[in-house]
Image 1 (cartoon, rainbow, N blue to C red):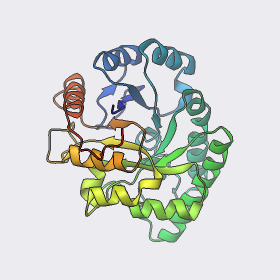
Image 2: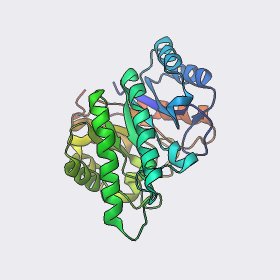
Image 3: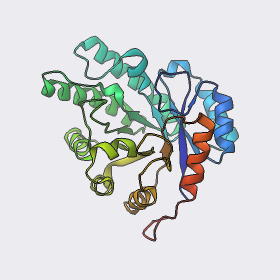
Length: 275
């Protein structure tokens, strides 16, 4: 059975493509009541959350936290691993590293999305060097806690750094550690990949986590992506992780989450589905 989670921001945030924000306990209870198996937490700063409370809530509702999103550190504070200012790069590294103890407690992966920065400097080699160095710092510390880090290829309108699965795999190969992988997101892939299915197959050994949103960034089923086909391909690679909804709260958070799970649970995945 598909393990489904949905993104929940622990605090109010300006990022639009998150259905649930704010009141943690009420949101977790609502998500559990819809039948989700997990909650992917978007956390700007781990200092703002109580790990004990999160563990208690997850145990109470029998939910897993498959991953922790860090993008709000960029969205709200403009921290990035590729900022020309070395002190901001250092703060971004420290912020990412501060997620590691919580991730270890929750057995969650850490997501690197926009905290890598949006790029666009004239010296792109320097940017890539900063990105590699920043990730290496964080991956080394994460490895000592048994934590994995998943880099998310993002579309060209959000960053100049790593748009495709092949670019992500090349970066993983360059860094060369086994606790680094990719988070693939169907919304971004629909913009950047010539074939979503072919790119899933090409990245199969590196997929740590998987986001679903339809072509319009609404809940799955609201656009034109063929999720039965995409998820059949994903599972054919041997993927055993969560499928996590990160989409716009349209018409509102509860309705979008309910429609997503109803649609995804109703999919008929073809016989090559490995579970």
